[in-house]
Image (tube, rainbow, N blue to C red; front, side):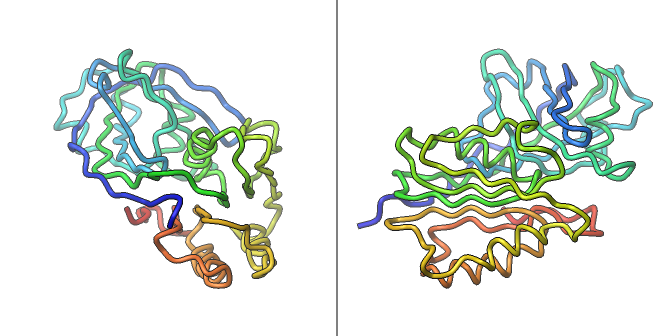
Length: 259
């Protein structure tokens, strides 16, 4: 008998105009923003790995009242909701800022408070039903919102391991997990994105498999997918026990993770 299942749910697809309410830099290149607006009242995101599409108008429209059609015509990228207040109409998101590159990161870092933004989705959710007997999470900064949400729904007696590759120091990001869940931080250094994370996954053997019905979540640059699937095979974990995704692909700004 399994301890948990991953169940797919369909959500009503809603487009919600909003505005930038505040921002806070956790590190020099990682920023948390809060969106607000009446259209965000009733927003929900049942799955920790949900994707919403965020629409970013150009800087020249800061503070302007834009129509839904104008917002929907703006460049967009996919992100995982971090936290929200469905009654107050607020939504928190986190962004990795890639220097001068990236529409979304630059907007999160530089847009004027009050700037217009659009939010669509999530269209569907993958929800954990039941309670895994062990947890294994791994990813880079782009996966931090999903890993925060997963860690936040773990029971107090949860057992597991969270491995994160990042540029900043562990204390900067403030990820919290139950006492029985070990959190490892890997410095990215000068290597390729996900290189440190891949090396850590490759070093895990069949003997490192935790006992019980284990849930695994791995998301980072696309190169992480193949070694992660090899690890799951060593551990005898099928696709129905795991979420494995390339959240982004080096050199491909338009890439988005499969839902």
